[in-house]
Length: 153
Image (cartoon, rainbow, N blue to C red; front, side):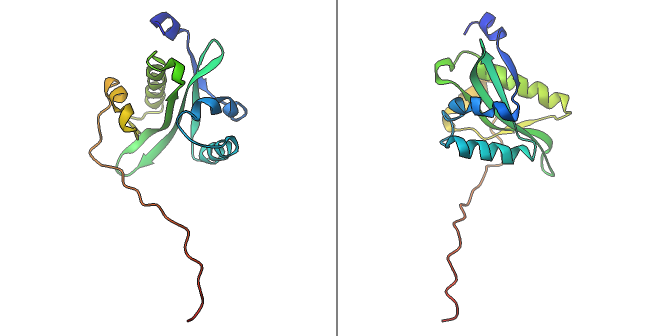
C-alpha cells in the first residue's frame, strides 16, 4: 500500500450490527466460531470494548479491539486487546494507521498511555511504532472447573 492508498483508508468504530463483518479478519488472530466471537464482543462491550476497522474501498482490511481502562497502577489508559491486519495487506501501513487512530482516541479521552499484549512475532512492529516492553510481566493461571464434591467419606 502506498502513502496515497494508505491515506484513502477509512478508519472508524463499528456498530454492533457491523461486528460480523470483522469476523473474517479477526479469525486470522483468534480461533473463535462466529457465534462465540459475537457473544464475547457483546459481553466485552459492556465494559467499554469497541471494535475499530480499517476499510480500503469498502472492504475491511484491518480490525482493532480496544477499551478504556483505569487502574491504580497505571491510571487512565487505553488497552488494545486485538490488532490484526488481513494477511494480504500486512506491511502496507494498515496496522500503523490503526495504531495512530488508537493514539488519537486515547489523547482525546485525556489518557497518557496505551498498553497491549503482543505476540512475540508482533513485537518488532510495535517497537517500530515506538512502543517499549513494559517492566511488569503478565502472569496467568488457568482455572479448571472444580471437581464435583463426593460428599462425606
